[in-house]
Image (cartoon, rainbow, N blue to C red; front, side):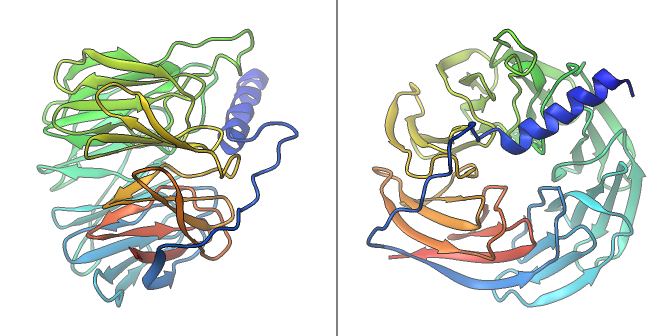
Length: 375
């Protein structure tokens, strides 16, 4: 590796870690408020440290799967009872993906392993092109894995053999991203460095369309970074993505035509729910947008520079986590703060994961919580 390449990589890593910071600006202090809702913890477990990685739990109809750097777990979805714990045999850097009888995790050395959902036995293990930094996805017998060098591969769920590969040139300077892919209606949606979004056919890996979310701007290489570092969100009609130091754009999910666009910088991500699109920007403000036009319906900036996660909406609540391990519940109708709860004090780096009428939250120190919100 050349000195320049090393320097650019270092800058990218620092940028990824500090993107919501601004020199001289302290994280907002937590405000006093009168709670009108309560975060209930249904069950919780200490999984172990995630290291520098962002690990998220996987959920099926009956089970929850969690991982630390060293272990992979299965829990009963309702009670939280531990059903098994195994050592994958490598340092887990991406996971957990679950579905169709498989549990999937990847390593920092480019290994991808599939375990049996029921007993945790290894079904297959393959070598992919680079480190796995996000949770693999499985749909219709195809495992989709994204690697740190920007490649996306479709593998046969039966034996791990590669079916297709999508790759594109990565700029010299880009943000180290833990973003994976979104699969919807036989399409794989993924965002890339330099603000590009791709829609790829799940079955054969054929590119259906590509579009530009944001163009690099600025005078320096750091200012010109405009990468999509979060997962696109999609439903039957539209797919939306946001770029760091760039824009938020929604496209027609099938044709790729631009529906609307607006200025926004985010390295955290989005959520679609009902008639609304929710977003957390790079400064830690949470927005509710009209999904048809992109118009702002409300904005909550009470948690500025607290490195909020992407929002998680369910029912009338919106949940975000922060760098001190706090969970915050906002009202989806006006953005007002309804509840707050501290976890283990370590950073919550990924948005909560859907689980029925509640959610799963994993901290960087490895606390896994099944939560719900009660009035």
